[in-house]
Length: 249
Image (cartoon, rainbow, N blue to C red; front, side, top):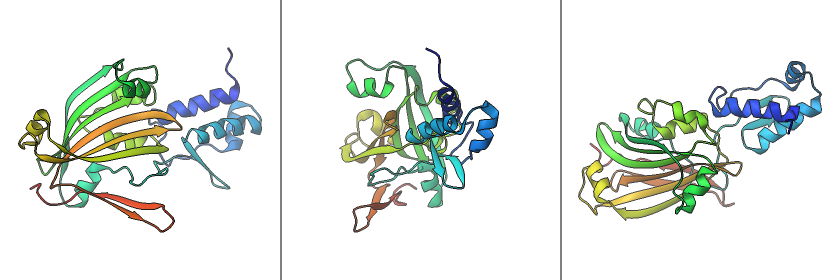
């Protein structure tokens, strides 16, 4: 089936955004420029831009133009933090050590993985976050390659996967689950604590326009991380996730 022109324009910009060629905040060409480039009508251009907006990939601002969407909260109690920025904000040096990286298909027995893969492959990652050289959190992450194809070629020894995703991949919806857990034997070894020691566990799913992007499970030292959410009277939340400066040095 032949692809319509507005679908071609949409697909071209979607690919450039997902590959990081166009970053959050970058301005797209004007409608007039797109009409001249593609030799089409304003209606065709508007269809393409409207589809990108519906997918959460761009923001259209009256009289200002269209811009690659920045990550934003959607019915959220807690925002998605950049752990590296938080640690730097409290005067410490952040580092991330990638322990395992594997491209694989979803486990057929795990519905969560099947949904996340959405008919394609997953990138599975395990790593450790450090503050001033001391373990702060272990992280297990799954990324839907269909949603973020550029992630396969990213040097994740140079930047943590969460930081890269926040800077390059717009998201429209997220879900956090916070719980208290005892460190597993493997987690305890990586955090240099005793097995069963109390930890804070944060699990998060993110989506863009209904398409799953990533699932992450982070297990923090219990005395080294806390989470704060500030609520307004209308039920909306101005939120922050704060790394405590106790117990990491």
